[in-house]
Image 1 (cartoon, each protein chain N blue to C red):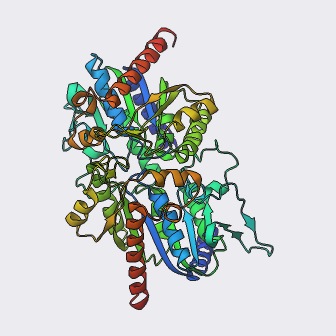
Image 2 (tube, chains in turn red, purple):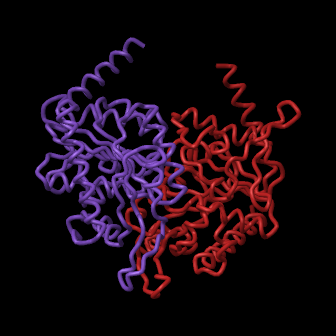
Length: 281
Length: 281
């Protein structure tokens, strides 16, 4: 028991020291999977890195890590520091983005992570305590979907998260899960920055007709209902999926698309939010 | 310790007795969320109930239960049996489908389920041990996405699952998570029935042009690669999302759509599989 307590204190001290070198921390959450959270996170990282910030991405999705695939850096191996106890160095993605993901640690594509809660908690703790993130301007944390063990662990381990971005699809079913996820942030007293509606409407590239394949407006509706800032909509775009599969950020490859333009408007809002946080923390 | 062991034996005895009254059990799994797993499960249940079978659906997604919403039976309350220790009666959906879901137990829409692994395990155990499912022809189990605690618990608690249906989106990122989920079923020695590719291509209802919004063919490709039966593709269809939001099964409301037709072909394959299972269990 005494031993355990000592280890916990040491972990917390290490996490505090590592996280203290990072100016801002943003977590990206969604009530359910498949709403494009990881693609959003990866492109957000690219946008900030392009503007000159030093960016890190912590892929906290233990079961379905996809940040390395989207950034085109699968297969990298993590390197341990030369000096004893120095820790593990994150992989490096485009524009010098530092990335830690379960994907770098799994031996084969077929290897599932069949872990129960306490083991996941430990993995995330190590991602925070034992990784040499260095001096960063911004750490983006891609939380696993839902309000389970992993999201809970991250929120409890990192003190001083600047904001949480909630990503949702526009359907009513998504609204329901967003409500619960918002309840989650409120119970944890975490600062919810606002809601982003992803996969919002589709414009036929051939005839220009508009279709609300996954619905439309659900994110905005739920924002009003719950009194949370609505940050914007990003339409469905085939190139987003293709670029993510190719490991190229779509805002870099298809900057002229309506999706990329909506995305950049969002980035401006996030920047604004972080600057205000710095002035009045 | 002795007390705990006794409780576990009693639980297992109860689960065995309840599950023994159910002819077939199918689990529906996906490597990641947002691929339409719950919509698929609900419609599969409707299709079988229409053909005269007694069907139950266990919504094992603790954090994001959506089966009640899709079947249009939200707000039902579960009733406890009159006789002591008789257990809890499931809610009843369209065509007499019996449904158990966390959604019936949460007081408000904003209530998140912030539970760690062991608590989730207990909830699922109760769904199996304390619910009066009665004599059923088929129990469909809508597993939470991924290979985490919940999926693991269900697979370990229910003996004799007839088959697992794996649902995937067509993108390459989805292929990666499917690989891991297949690894999961193999490690647990669970019978994988096959892979279904959902959200496969989109045909513009106005001009007829085809777009692979979420990709196309990824499910078939991964099936070949891993040597697993490929069961079919279901195209993206706006009515699927709308009907799910309205709480009406889309195969009932839009039976003429290509999506509903593909779906019914799949249902025929599942029927066939279960009949063969009955002949040679």
